[in-house]
Length: 248
Image (cartoon, rainbow, N blue to C red; front, side):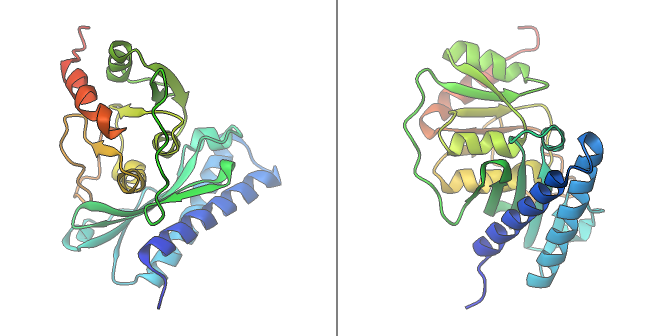
């Protein structure tokens, strides 16, 4: 029996994380230069290994020139070699590696490595959800908190928790450190495909902010908004998000 898609995703996300930790640990680079080198090295390994292990599948990576011929294929690997380049370059832990497989537009397999924490979470081995936080905790960007998220948090009485990469924020909900991740500031498929697959497998609500489903392997990979939250909170969060107006 060969390596399953879930095993492949987990192995590659973890291996890319090890490359990134090793590079940072060498101490030769820092800041943007470190982030650029990390992106390049992790991406080269991921793309090489995916093409070797799954030669018939398509590939979409943040760091590779896109080929929209992938849209004619059922299976596409969607990877972000380094999600949270700023945090990685600053020596923080809230960055991630995303390896996902979308099948017919659905985030089916995902692995999100959190190398700074020594963890890789996968759709193949979902973890049990912890009880909700009291008060609720809602994740926002460290650098540009979405106004919609602040609006919803105020009405829910939720505490705001600032964190770096999209993958780190999504996995904080999976791990029970927070309850809601509402993002409206613009993302691409590689930013959220692997996190979505892991969150879905864990039993969380995952959708666009208008409640519609996330669709992957589109000709334009821009996928600007996302909601990952506990299932019992989804209806209220979506209702409040719909009420938001920039005039608020």
